[in-house]
Image (cartoon, rainbow, N blue to C red; front, side):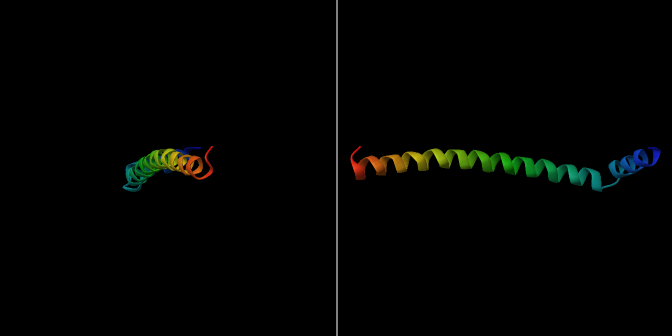
Length: 59
């Protein structure tokens, strides 16, 4: 158990720990932006298809 604790401490103290954390935060932000963009575009595309459907088929 002590060996695992020592490895975690050395990882946090080294440059790799903060770098991995920064990459995780950037990835999370990219995912949030992608989900927001897909949701916004999905609503617009759905409305466009509904308009085309009602115009073409007169429902």
